[in-house]
Image 1 (cartoon, rainbow, N blue to C red):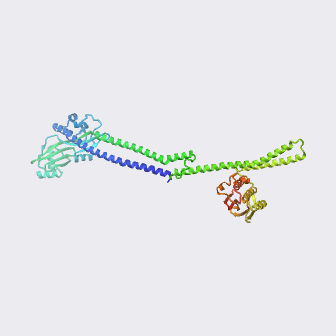
Image 2 (tube, helix red, strand yellow):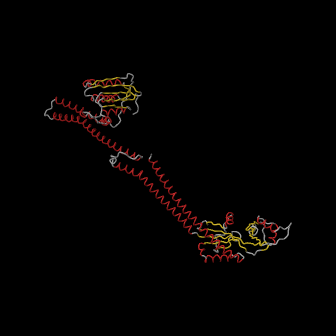
Length: 565
């Protein structure tokens, strides 16, 4: 698995696992706290409702029944007195009392400019009618509001007297049936109007079938109680309105704040846990392997030289490849140092002989011209010695030229050459040498081979080096097979001998300058290096096959047409 995917997978799984665990435990905690909060809310709600209905509403109703009028100042005084004397009132923030509708006419706090009415919609009114009260929280405040509707008689009951009207006056039982069905008969309406009771648009609520009813004048907002005592119907006008009590709920507020605090603490803990887990994962998957890789680089691969296995991730594989590369570089460096030593030894060997000859010649010239009298024969000998010096100097120039051209591209003098004829001329130079070495030269030319664009002198030098090496590889004699073929788009020459072969451990070094296995016979190791460079300059290719005891074969492929080097 790629390191980036493995790292991403581990990190993502860690984050998901921690978040799932956080959600699981936090949801359990929240459910427990919510259940406790609901239980506390229900308990406190029952207590608050009891205070609102019994203590506060009872006091307001007693005041209204006693005075038969709505006096805001007196109600305010009653509420203030309750606040002072009643222990249940310690959590009461404010009390609002409305008249008829939801407009506030009296309050515990005499001035309450922020509140002009009790906020009740149709649903809230229906809830109050059904359940007797509405309990709700106040937005923006840590308070609970309880709204209760009150009905209080402000006048004494009046007896309803019926008068005849259109048609026969209904019996008492008929009125009761009509009222129980929620309607008012015309005669009953007339009787109410006669008593100054106006119910133009009324709704009848049956409180006790056949005995007590409530009539609400929807148009004017008045409420009346209609009751039957023996054979008489009595009607009484009721004062209606709402009492709103605002309670402070510190316990619930404290529980909410505690829950929010715990949630914040858990988020901090989860964040810290994620940071630790991500840090540990990063350290294990990335930082430690990178630190180990750094130590290996700094130690040059020595630390890991004894390690046989690495982790299967990308850093483990990269470390393995790095160690292998470091050892290859070290081995290559060692080989290059050894090759450099051979290179220096080869150069020293190459220039030592010409310098020795020049030195000996100079000593001899000194001896010749140190004589008291120089004879004409001495002059001739000196000229011969100077010719030898010039020859050795030319050899040194050639050696230096070959040395310089080893590391720079060769300049070619390309011309069309009959390749078979070039090979044949080189072989003719080895006729006597091959015969003395008991080496048989066997050739097979492709007659259809066309002319090849090449530098004849350089290719001749290459062929000369290869054939010479083959002869030297057969000290007891043998055979050399020279074959030319056409393999479009190349002309191919193969030189194969039956010599001793090249050891496998040396085959990668045969083209290195001054690498040779023939130090004893005076080889300096430049022949194959120069040959390889010449073939490469022609955009060709040279390949070698060799096996110990079975000989060596060199295959040279040269393009028929010249290409830009």
